[in-house]
Length: 342
Ligand SMILES: Nc1ncnc2c1ncn2[C@@H]1O[C@H](COP(=O)(O)OP(=O)(O)OP(=O)(O)O)[C@@H](O)[C@H]1O
Ligand code: SF4
Ligand SMILES: [Mg+2]
Image (cartoon, rainbow, N blue to C red):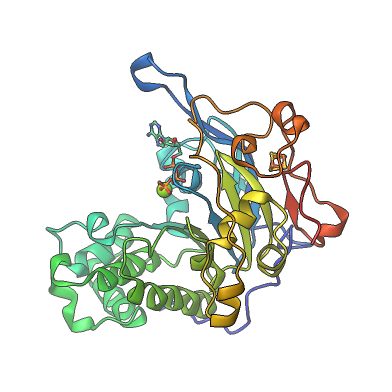
């Protein structure tokens, strides 16, 4: 078993590990997909994205469907290769490593997927599924099975169920198996791509709480992807909001939730119900205009301008860059010509 970590995750800021190198550094990363059979323009799914994740920290990555969240996550675990930019993990540039060079690093970089049943091989027992990453790293079958039993217990499942098949488990239990599999090799960073979106609302909180506990106990870092800001609030130290392939706002959780500076973040937050009925009745609801634009033909200037209630002439021609306005406080950056000043 991995030794539980007793100290809390490091305090989060813009550069999360001040004085030490971050565990993960993503710098100006882009990923372009070709247009469909040459008939449509290429899609720049991720367009110049940069962020860091410190050891033991969770960065929430949030945005509407199609904004490039999964593509970002898949590049970090190198299921996809970046078109340009760099991804540095533990001080090593992994952006263009080949499979052989990536192999020893895979144990430190794991992924949890959205649909637990779809991501588990229905013809394999749970023991085999959880042991697979360990066996791939050269572990013995006996050790891998023992470790799988320990991991079942760690994620709240019954170790005696190791020889069952995925269909014998509920969605929430299947996601616990997916998490156990991701933890098998003792990773330092887990990319969780919408790990609760496919689950019943009643089960979502249990899985988020489990992931938060595992982070505390094991000192994991997460990139926690969701389309809903309320899902990541419980678990993240910092949050990044994506729109059409770009990060439009990033900062410490306390800042972004209490004082969102980008109109898009404000709209996303205004859709989150509040637990207090009085606050819920008074909640300001901002409706986004129209649908997200076609990513193969993004609008000029600020790509959010066709939907932005604050858009002005400058927004239609000049793309805003992510910058830290003085008022925004430590590490809170926004890509908007006219950010909110609250
Ligand atoms: N393999 C691919 N080939 C072509 N286009 C792709 C491919 N993968 C993603 N895209 C496109 O890239 C853009 C970003 O997709 P991505 O899956 O990263 O978004 P997402 O934010 O994860 O969305 P969702 O919330 O629906 O999961 C979309 O326009 C999508 O259609
Ligand atoms: S730059 Fe302009 S269009 Fe873009 S979010 Fe800011 S105010 Fe809205
Ligand atoms: Mg996705």
